Length: 459
Ligand SMILES: Cc1cc2nc3c(=O)[nH]c(=O)nc-3n(C[C@H](O)[C@H](O)[C@H](O)COP(=O)(O)OP(=O)(O)OC[C@H]3O[C@@H](n4cnc5c(N)ncnc54)[C@H](O)[C@@H]3O)c2cc1C
Image 1 (tube, rainbow, N blue to C red):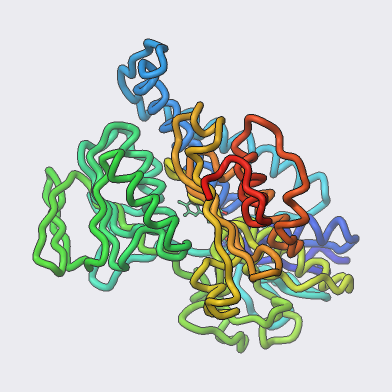
Image 2 (cartoon, rainbow, N blue to C red):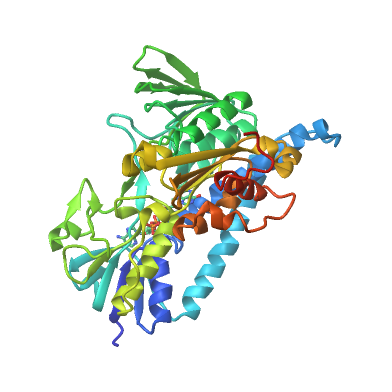
């Protein structure tokens, strides 16, 4: 291949793009990866990793604050956000270095600059045209959305600015009770802020099973996080000292900051996609289930494709497209089989169908659900967490959904994912032994109960 001709040209070096690059080169394809900011994209630099570092610092703060309850007399003196940020940046930079080394070692050509699709087979970067002989992959990610008339700036911030605060605000309003909103609400509460969430839909984490929303709402209220749900934002004014947020029910709320966390929009405009004829809908790039756009040879992955906006979905789609282009005919990705974790305290984790979705799909009489309360789980008692594991199964059929709330339950989603994606029957998995005392054991209990032989459960 010449210096500007590659098998694959990938636009965007985030989760979706770099996964496609790594898998493509593994399969013997020559790969150019175009990135205008930093390799690793939103997830590594502004999303998953930095927020989870903050959440870990928040967990340590909570442990210190509450330690005397278990006889460990530590006191929480203060939160030094500058040091927390240094810790967070240390984590990100180590992973960033590792990723840069990995991409280099796989002989992926990283092109630093802003790319533009100029034809179904070419991408221009700073006046140079790069040609793809086997496929172009669009992987340009997403941006923090706002509401019409709600301008970001000053004390009205998005998750980007929220990561870089140097002091903990005394009082914050979080607009949006979805994943990003509840994670920041959780961090700030643990750091000592007074937090109110405003959510237009009737419940927090509205995409989750209703039981999870209820449990999270209860746990947040217990932690002193206020949630105003089912009420719409009307407007905000800001001064040198704070913000005043008004809601459509006539309430006004005052705070130091307003975090706008109302979702993420596709970053797919102004890069030539429409001009080349790529079909789009409300800014998203449309694909078939093999992630091909309507333009032959042009594929799309990650947050620009309608569906779950999650890093591991992007990885999976990137790998899928690389394999598709290499002729391996990979299995279509089942969106319902993708695990989802919200890392607030307590965590919410799920995979598969909610009870409502299963009911819609199979009919109420064909669906059975079981909730195992973590109150009966030894390790959860030791950790002082409450919550549950809820299994949804098709009657006399496989488990089709797993839903959990509780400290650290995100780490349990692996088993849920195996069970749902392998369409396991509770009767089969109930015979597998879970280690005692682990939180994971709660899974075993739930399977036993669904298989009709509950052990540590009230019937
Ligand atoms: C606060 C926050 C927390 C999150 N937490 C989680 C989490 O815990 N777990 C999880 O799974 N997901 C999480 N996400 C979502 C996750 O970050 C995204 O789903 C993931 O990054 C999407 O990958 P992507 O490749 O589609 O896009 P991105 O990661 O956004 O990458 C796109 C890349 O394309 C580049 N680019 C764009 N246009 C051009 C151009 N014209 N030329 C060159 N380069 C271009 C961008 O600079 C960017 O690097 C979080 C997101 C946020 C904002």
